Image 1: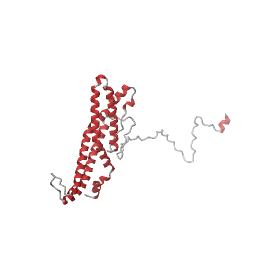
Image 2: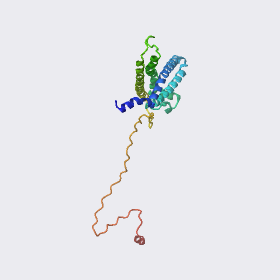
Image 3: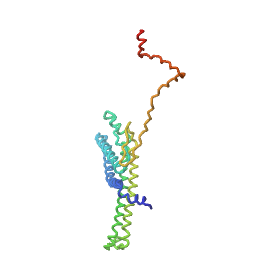
Image 4: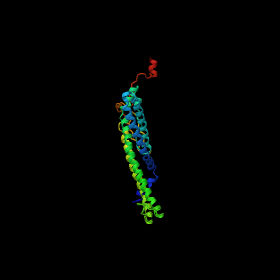
Length: 268
């Protein structure tokens, strides 16, 4: 393993994106559980009460809430995962009338992709929570073994006390496991970022002249090529007849609007 590989391996601990991704994973499970509970409860109650007209305002409140949740998730994907996602669409601003605004909002593909992303947040959050717990418990277990060895504390079935040599060996193993865990979490962050880009771009049709907002540290979206400006064409000039040496070139015929010579003026 050369110096560059070692730098990449151990330098993961000083990269801001590593800890931003960990923050995303810490929030993923509680947010996913909240989204799932709120949406399932709200949609079930709203659909069940539609027959008595009470469910319609409930469904509208739930729809507005999931729009806000989707906007919050786009911000997380952009600033915590480094994903490049478009801005939250506002389809209802392009039409007039309450019925037209409702049709524009619920007829947009991004509205339903956001809902699917919110439901899937619980699955992704469960995986994030599992990875965090396994990584933290494994690293903590290795680093705690020297204390059990020094103070003769049994750790297996209340009878086995780890020897001192095993406790000393467990320290570098715990440190190595810590760096490996950071790389594993970064890989999972990359998968979550690509998932967010796919879901938030699907069904989104940007307006004319709209541009995607690049994420912090992310690639800048390509701009459309600009057509080159061609100079205006001019009519070709007719070739002039050659003039013999020692002779004067014939005078050019007068053009309309030119001033007359003095002699012609006097004759007139």
